[in-house]
Length: 335
Image (cartoon, rainbow, N blue to C red):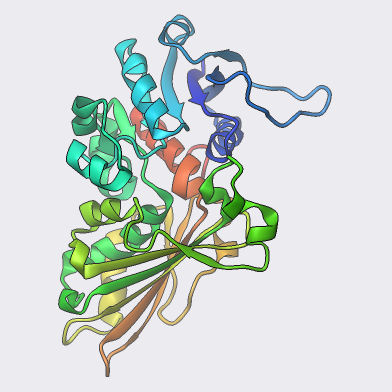
């Protein structure tokens, strides 16, 4: 029998992507957990088949033996539902920022709100499989990473750990995302006339994904400058990261570090030095593509990293985490 897994927030972009991917998974059966019945959703053609639908309650989850619940919901909703689902034995993978920052103080600083479940915040495992695979497999609550931090941490952490970045010179990340990263809820800034033929920077110095980068990469806030931009495309993230290398480091050093760290990682793909990925290379996939150039004479380096914000940046990574939780092949349904 297939394992039953539930999706709360299935009408949003990340939730809808979850359902699409789960429907092709060999070992699970997606169930729609209804949280807001009055919300508008896309109509299917006549004869179109939808997954079973039940209320997003602990009682329904227990009765139907749902083993994993995905919360593709705002943070405040995740904080409300997560303890209820855990109480009846379901494991929870949360796609919001509710459980990513480890302490209530961090959450208050970056989300400007008080955390209502501090014990779960301390318990949650950060769901970046390339770095936390063993902990994820043993967890009951997974904080699925944000889309921007997924890309920048996969690009930066191996270099920070190897000590090849001149941290005194600082690291700059210029990040650009498709409009789906802002969610489905309508707003002026994401309306067609505002986005098309335009490029906008936002949340300078105060983007709530910054602490995820700091906690995972090992950088300090004073060493890292991050600016997010809204691209007039549906999906995809491209981040251009600038830094100075330590003396004696060259392009071959960087390549050796990346190859050593990711030689066994299916979803991280490396480009030969001097070649750079683009958005189309990762669209609708769970891959993270990394390319770079370096100038030994000036010790400058530029790394370009791309992901699909709805897949490796959200739904695909959530399924990667689910596979680890349930003991399925890590690439099942997304490879």
